[in-house]
Amino acid sequence: MAKHLARIHGTEEDKVNCPFYFKIGACRHADRCSRIHHRPAFSPTILIKHIFRHPIREAELKALSDGLDKDQVEVDKDKATEDFLQFFENLYEELGKFGRIESLHVCDNLGDHMIGHVYAKFSEEEEASDALNIMDGRYYDGRKMEVEFSPVTDFREARCRDFDEDTCNRGGFCNFMHIKPVPMCLIASLEDDCEEERRREDMKRAEREHRDRSRRKRRHRERQRCGGRRKRHSRHDGDSDEERGNGDDSDTSRSRSRSPKRRPRSYSRSRSRSMSRSRSRSNSRTSNTKTGEGNKDEE
Image 1 (tube, helix red, strand yellow):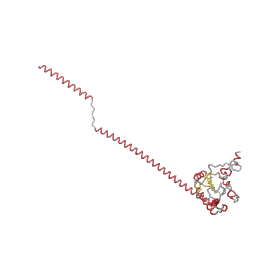
Image 2 (cartoon, rainbow, N blue to C red):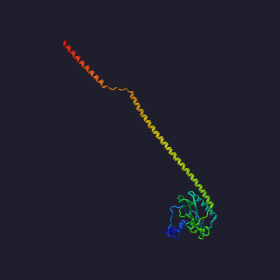
Image 3 (cartoon, rainbow, N blue to C red):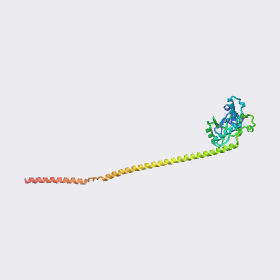
């Protein structure tokens, strides 16, 4: 069963998934289709919807605005070819900034679901994602660009072989891609120019990164120097404070050394003095008593 589903996936036998959306990335029934349209989350191919101004449709709209019959519209093929090649160059150069383009196809269909569609396949999915994020919502030639991932990766299954052989009977309303032809020499020249431009941008980016890196290193070194200076200043201030404190202590010690020292009174000397005083008092008392008694005897 699994092998059968894998074999019929994206074919007319598949009654669940839309084969036209799987092959072409567009369906004439759009959201009204009875089958499922699997929109990829990632793809190397992006689709820019209705960005190319088809000369036949532009001439028809101009005729209708002028009140003329649109069936009698005539298109200048030389001018239309020149405008298309100019459009192709501008779009290729703009998309080539995101990466290498493997293929860029502009649809020549006139159906409402495919007119003006542009398919760009990149070599990497990341490059396609960058192009989608940048280009989606931008304006080109007065039209807002609507960009989405496309399931188309093999354009051999999507393009109309009868159109390539100039034998398609459905004309511009064919459901397969009518890819407008582009000279290979022009594609090769544009590819070389885009490669040179990407190389130049890479060199500029590398130079900017180098300058930013050197600027960051310089700032880091300056911060380290400023930090070292602050530490040295703080240490110097601490040493000076200590020296000032030591100077104050030395001054006080000097003043103390200069001031006369008081000798401590010895306990033995004071005791001997008191004893001598008491002895002299006692001797004076005895002498007085003796003299008193002598005087009494004489009387």
